[in-house]
Length: 224
Image 1 (tube, rainbow, N blue to C red):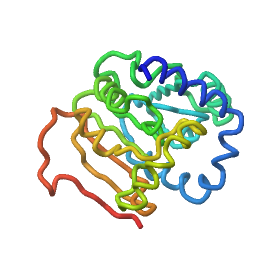
Image 2 (image 1 turned 90 degrees about the vertical axis):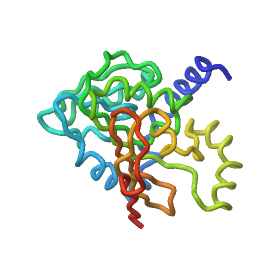
Image 3 (image 1 turned 90 degrees about the horizontal axis):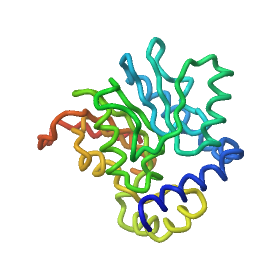
């Protein structure tokens, strides 16, 4: 499937889910995701912050106070729900309809960027992460919370088999190696925290010239 066609299909899938998206995710959100979102955003700092894939606005309560926040999403219907949530919360955030693979911002426009469960859905995740790298200033940081392919051989293979169905139903790939994709896009990994039998990863990386990191330069923290 060509890039533009895949992007259009992804947009349609998330438009279709927008009205029921929060309700569908409510159980796992209450059990784990809400706490992990708060943890991720606790270390997002800077005068200019970019959220990629704002969705229905689940992260808006955690945007840092005193920062100028810009949030993008591919789905117009998701973005409308995020706008309503921002209004209820009294959050001053610039909401922009945009494709993560073609961000409409100049180079070095942001001090930090964050995304939660987004680069499982971007058709070309390395291209999207490269765009995030482009719009970050030198030494700016990206903060990601993602689900990834399990390291366990059997579970990983099962995720590979189920993935086509997951993509058709939800739009999200469940078997991506997002940590590797972050490095391939030119970021230097700083911290990778692991949870949920290795399926959930909290990733922090720096937008600097790509270097070969020594083993001790990346902290891989198992959270359980």
